[in-house]
Image (tube, rainbow, N blue to C red; front, side):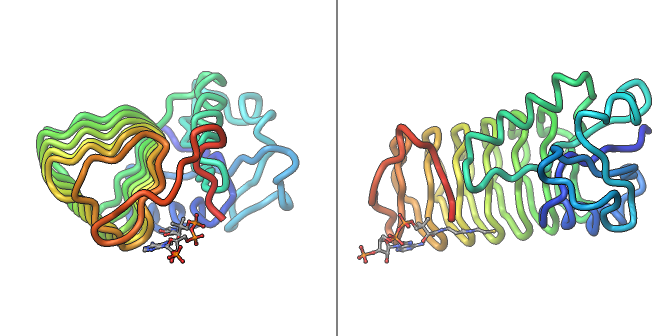
Length: 221
Ligand SMILES: CC(C)(COP(=O)(O)OP(=O)(O)OC[C@H]1O[C@@H](n2cnc3c(N)ncnc32)[C@H](O)[C@@H]1OP(=O)(O)O)[C@@H](O)C(=O)NCCC(=O)NCCS
């Protein structure tokens, strides 16, 4: 199994590093960051390199990569960073925490991160570059797109559909058979009982729309 370059040096990268210490299949070689975000030449005791030098110092023939750039301040950036890593020729790895309850009937693209403890239901599918935080219950037969963020402690009932680049806030509940349309934002602790509209911001119990972000996308403070 190849060692891995973590593209990112944020809180989420640190979370991944700490979690992966329990995971023998996921050995981190170094961290990479865009030049303007580099802070010294090491991070968490490992080398920290300029992303533009990665292919030379840690070539794709010998190393895999995982992009851990949350992009919460601009969710649409998640796709950009993912493609930037992929365009360098790296195989992008998934990270599944050792205490995630998941079975082989789940289909998955690349560059997904699932922190445990979480339960991922059977017969589900997810695309690429999704982040699922700790203590998430994701029901069976789910269909998650790409670049989605699911906050810690969220519960999503069976047959849930989550559209691309959606942000599910901390501790949300989405009942079964709901379609969360692309680029939906669900506020923390909301209870979603109806399908959402694309680009909508939804809060409360039951969740209701308080606005749209069609032009600018989701930008979290
Ligand atoms: C929804 C959210 C993004 C705020 O969006 P916003 O456009 O800045 O909204 P505002 O703070 O201006 O609030 C607008 C209204 O929605 C209400 N509201 C905001 N968030 C809410 C929530 N999560 N649940 C219920 N009501 C909420 C406010 O009370 C306010 O109501 P009012 O108009 O009656 O006063 C934010 O509150 C939120 O829930 N963020 C998620 C954070 C999170 O989960 N982080 C995960 C980190 S791991």
